Image (cartoon, rainbow over the protein chains, first blue to last red):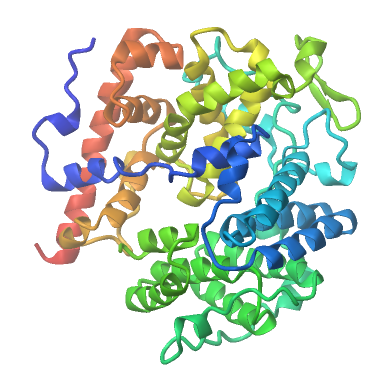
Length: 302
Length: 202
């Protein structure tokens, strides 16, 4: 039974070998495990989440975090969960040496909030409105049962039932972007290119401003969700249009790095590789050490 | 048999689930240690598996976290020595849900690998990123049970007996799935090459 040689160990034409080998370097980044630990509330990831990685936005992120946390209390479930997802990302990007302690503290709090809301386990006290499940696991289980009989390790499988995977928010579902957020963000307006050419990297990617109105984080998240939804639907042009509108609406936004990653992804999707590289290089020049920089390097193949 | 239910205020109530199972095992020190050990030992494997089972790159972190969250809720149920099987089984379910939520195209017949529009030329196939996307398309053309065996054998380099243990299937079944998966891989890859050749005029 074990006599099968692996395909890559045998003779293969170039195309098949390229296909197989393309998967071999598809591995999690160095911090992914720490993020998982933090998500699970195991502490080890807190330092990673608050690690020294990016620009001097710890205070700004902290301010936004307070705002976001506050907003969670009043916003709808979808928005609240999405905010926490994005703020978590922002904390990872924004913490610096000078603000490390603040960032770490905030990150821990954010992760804690995220766990409570995102995971929303049975013992949690999250409000019922925050438990809206976006992932219908029972149907997934049913589908798996239908499509792959015998494949799941039944004896070892978890009892994954309706309660096993509670409401877990994913921010990129096209159908769940609030219409009002879409309207507020100006979806459908023409794409206005950012002033990349001739501008310094710093000008092209302004640092998040601690003076940004707290509520803008809510709107920023909603705005970027529209762009993410467009991308997920394969509408890169629509995503770029939305990102242009986003730039106009949030010139000093706290989520500029995330917007940049989305823009580069959209350009790559359109095969506008030169433009994608230009945008990515400008961002990397101003934020060389952040996780988004690494992501962008991968996206544009550098 | 009544259907297990989830109640926000009352917690999880499932058939065959003891009350002790309703609390997160991660909330106890012992549970924390076990869960941390699980993450340390298997996170990378689970993340890679999720990707190869069709979870998009930008969803892989979330999906992996969800797998381990499920494990945190079921630590007491996981048999010693079967931790990886538990996690992989969970990853299979989670990957299915993420693929569905991501509106990725459904599994298609082997003749329907869609590479005609925007497909690569031969030269472009050397581009790893494109090759990875094409591999996804090829893997998407496989039924999930064959895909699972294929990725575990070809990429994770597990043996057939190890895979049989992991997917709880007989050795012969795993071998036949692997054979069929390879046939599908060769056929799909040949179509990719043929279309790329046509496009590139080779």
